[in-house]
Length: 263
Image: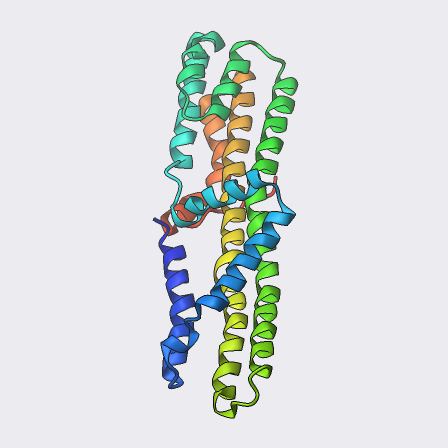
């Protein structure tokens, strides 16, 4: 579980509800199913128009990445690469054939297979970088969808407020209900702003950070496999690859992925 995400959501929604209570308002006053229907339904509809259904489904699945920290530890990945390097240096690249089947992820398995097959190092790098680019394009779609939803939600909230005011104007004859009706109308605006700024945009930012972390690990794999293919000393490979983990270790302890360092 990503504690930072959970705390953020609780603080975000709790601050709004707590502020309402401290101001002497009733919690029931901001619980309006109609406003929620307009904002959530309208935002979801606009997002569906903007992106393919497969992307929408992918975005919903990616919520798990926001709420939970990946179990993939880059330190373990580094140790795996060093073990591959040690084995290849002692027994030759062909000895990595078994690792091509048992590596922890598909990306690494593909890379090791090409190393065993004796692919030219530059072609290996080019192929792996294409794989990485395709992965990045696929994964960043979820962040783009949440970011777009965060842009739609406030506008849909305003639409909900206008609809509520129209309803108020239709009942001007009952002046005793005007204040309450106007308050209810503006709840939709609150829902739109909360949906955008507590959920959608923060989810997008978190997914972007997760993606940077995943790209960093794959770049480390590429560099490691190229080094193994070039027959470099395992100790030297470890020192070189640790540059990718300078911030990653501390970030993992806090539940936040480290950003990629410039190369």
